[in-house]
Length: 456
Image (cartoon, rainbow, N blue to C red; front, side, top):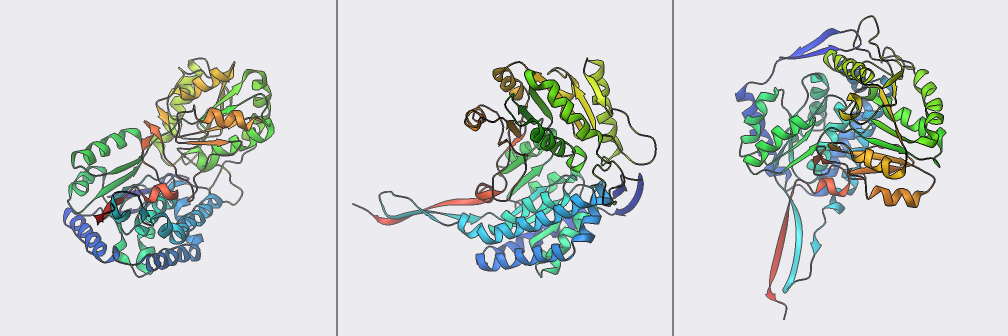
């Protein structure tokens, strides 16, 4: 049984039965049958379907946004933005997918030799709760445009969101393209072991990634993993402190800080350390936390009680270890799973909030005595998802970007995902890429074709 709890009130709002093993087999068979037709469907026709799905999302934007707000607590304004961004992703691949996958002629001893990009088959997507629509379309839009079909195993805490995503394809007239698998984690192996399932994409924790990667490797199936992050943001003495503070405050509290690419460790040059905190603290203090259905709410609840408790543990341990809490740091009284915007300063690498991923509105500020130390601190993590650099010297920042162990670096701007640009991590943040021209290439057969006779 999937049980959805409203994190604003702590009350159960609905339940869904999980699929039986027979129903799972039927869903896989449907995906395979649909693939046999879809793989031969011209790009132009595939684009029509993705654009239709985007139209349907935007027509029903308010209802879809409200589902996210009720099931996982995303502020309603942010939820509307997520629906819009998901539609953008579908439209992007509808417009550019064919060009991304164009055959490439390569010189050889053949009369003609080229590479073409062919679909693989049904692809399994394992998704988390924190961006229910965006992460689903980040997975399915490129896979579908490439000619694959999709099996979506969404998080059990957002079952209505998952149902609504699948229903979009029903309404678009192509129900076989995306099957919603209401299954628990212990049923994933059954799906991935099936010969019809050709690949897997997972967004989640490093632990979950290691389990799925092992299973995919056992069955020799490609995998893309987008896992956790402890993303550093480096603020140097010549940076625009006001802009850096405002952008990093926003990055830290979007979705109540429940984002893999949020600014997690803010590493500030010692010469501007106090000045940065002076600007940064009131930006966090003035945020409105409350009911995410209210238009002016900026910080909603944490998605689950256990996640709220984990944040509280990380903050309290960091303070015990010598960090200072200048703001927040206490679970508020009342209903729901709220945690206030919290500012921890004087944090060092060995403290809990620096060496673990903090998945909530906790800002961690650390001091660096030099550029070299700042870079070393940035890389002192098992993760490597994203980072940002703040400095007036963009040439220096570009040189430093090559030294940062992360899949994505923003210079003087917010770290974000964009359908036009590849996204993914290194180290324990995963492997493979999603989005952009690179993302659509993950689940295709890069087939070499050699045409004789030889070219003498």
